[in-house]
Length: 148
Image 1: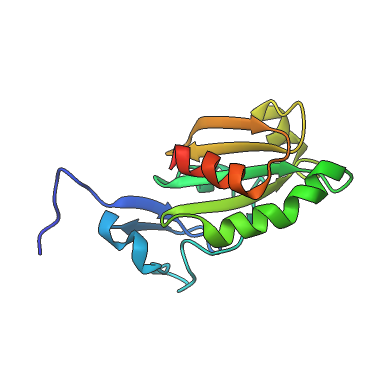
Image 2: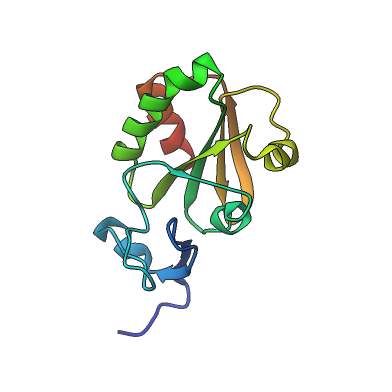
């Protein structure tokens, strides 16, 4: 079947090997895998972002929710298991990642992180939403859905 030019495939960067993949919209519910390494493009767990992967990962056409955190932060530690559960329950085509602001201070500064935890939603390289402070699971899932 020919590709629909009015609905081009989405560009999704693999969270494991950083390879760009093309995924048809209708395949998002099928748990697509990376064409290079075979890993899930939408893992049901948060993955770590680093200075080496950050720019490429936020460039995906699908929603990427980033938890900006630090190990010394009490609210961040409280939110960590909630963020894990949210990744398990995220809608198809949504990925969750974590950015350690202590390990990646240049990215934290570039993002203007003033308080942690801070959630930032990205799509196609652009920030589309931001939320500071820990959220309970129902509100976090609602926040994710409102930007998906």
